[in-house]
Image (cartoon, rainbow over all chains, first blue to last red; front, side, top):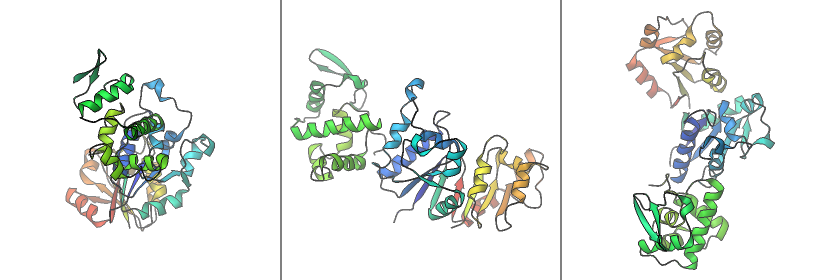
Length: 119
Length: 111
Length: 99
């Protein structure tokens, strides 16, 4: 039985390589059929904003790439309720179906996984 | 880096034989890329190449084998979305070879 | 499945420590290294937040990072050297590095 991994992605999409690196770990792990979950926390929830137009920065479309997570077998997607609320993001503005979790549910979530990495 | 001559046009390829400029892709280019791999494209091949182009249009990345199979099963049904069928069509490395022929970048998440 | 949370960024510059404190389990621990040891600066909200953690949560700080910054650990924190750091990593079920 493979060890489960929770990837906590907490960097804004266009500020540096953090968001891309977290996604690459998820896609690579998913391609190898590892049990992977992904949690969007802090500024990481900005990755989920539907209105992004990465072409303006000549970057790869992270939002489109995130849609591929379920295809790569990464179906457990979570976001911090608090991080979304603090940043004024409602469900209607999100590009991905994520489960919103409050702080105590996040503590339980972390506990479930064998490994956790925060980027 | 090398080039592929298609109907008098030089098409730039990277060191692994993938298109440098994805805009260069056309059906004749796909046929020439296939010929370079000693492959004759059938309707079943084209179906997968079109599927890959749809995958890329949707997700902006090339799938590894597992997501390719999953996507194929979703769009074409499980009689085609399985590793046996895809391996048979693309010499055992469907994600890499089909991405090449479909004019997609080399998949990064597949070893 | 207790977790050792490793922090190495200044808590005055970003929200890693704040977020970590919110996700902390009762049997988890925090290890401060690098600029994260500034969280122990006396008279600050960060130190206060650490002091408010339940006693079941262990708090560690890396000796040489404290010394280099001219800081002293309060009673709440246990000072560890590098061998101690390695030992901690093996003691907890998992290590969460806040990169």
